[in-house]
Image (cartoon, rainbow over all chains, first blue to last red; front, side):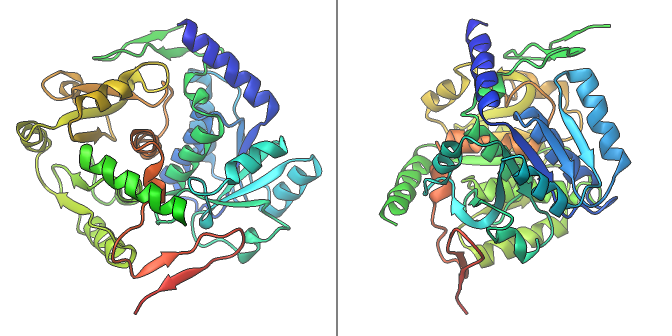
Length: 197
Length: 197
C-alpha cells in the first residue's frame, strides 16, 4: 500500500511536468464505436488527462466515457467534434508538442525518440489514426515526432497503451483515481470491489 | 542497426526460454471481428508465437492473419475452434503456465507477479476474455496467475500489449520478422518500405 501511494505521488509529479492528451482521428460512427471506445478507455486508464474525438461526434462513446468516469473516478476530459487541424493548432499555440503514433515512425525501442520527447518537457498531444491518415500528419507542421511502437502492423489501441506505459514509466498503473464509486481490490483469485453508494 | 540486431537476438533468446501463446475467449463472430483482429495482430506484433480463437471459428480473422503473416513475415500460428477447456488442459499437460488477464488480478505494477511468472521458466498461455468470463477462469484449475494491467476498466487489446511489452522487456519491438515481403524502414518523417516481389 505504501508502494502504491508512492507510485501515485510519483505519477502526479510526472503528470504535472508533462500532461498527455489523446486525439483520435478517422473515427467512423457506428463502425468504429467499440474500437474507439477501447482507445478512449485506454487513454483514461493509462494516465492521459483527456481525449478528443476529432472531426465527428459520437454520443454513444461520450456517454460510455462519462459513465466510466462517474463510477471509476478521476478527472478525464472528453471532447468531440473539433477539427483535428484546430485541435493541433491550439495545442501548439499553448506550447505543447505533438506525437503521431504510426508504424512508419522512429521505433520507440531502437531509437532515443522517447528521451527526446521527455527532454522537451512540454505537454504531449498523442495523435492516433485509424484509417489511412492524411500525409500532412507526418510533416513538421503537424507532428513534432512520428513514433512507431514496433514496425509491424497491429492496433492503435495497443500502440497507445505501450506509449503511455513507457511515457509514464509504469507509474500510471498504480494511480489512485479520486472520487471513485467503485474500486477494485487487486487479489490473486476472484473478484473483490469496494462500492460506495 | 547493431543495436537492433542485438535486440533481436536477445529476444530470440528470451522466446526460447519462455514462449507465449494467446487464447482469446468470448469472441462473437461479426460483432467482435475488428476488436479480436486487433488482439490477434497485437499478439503477433508484440512477440507471441501464436493465437487461439477459442470455442468459435471466424474465417475472416483467419484470412486477415494469414495475409498479414505472408506479407510481414514471421511464423505466427493461428488456431480456432478448440474449446477453451481443452486448450488450457493440453497447455498444462505440456508443462506450460496460464496467465489470465483481468482487471481484478494482481497489479503488474505494484506486485511481484511478473517476476514470479518469469521465475517459473515455463511457456505462458495468456488468456484474454471479452464479455464476462466464467468464474472458473480465476481458479487454480485454470489460471496459475490472475494479472491486472492496472485496476481500471480499459481494453483487452491494451492489456495484452502492455503484458507482452513488459514480459519481453521491450525487446519484441526490435524483432526482425523473417521472410517478410514488406519491411518498414523507420524514419522521422514520411513512409518508407522495402517491398520484395
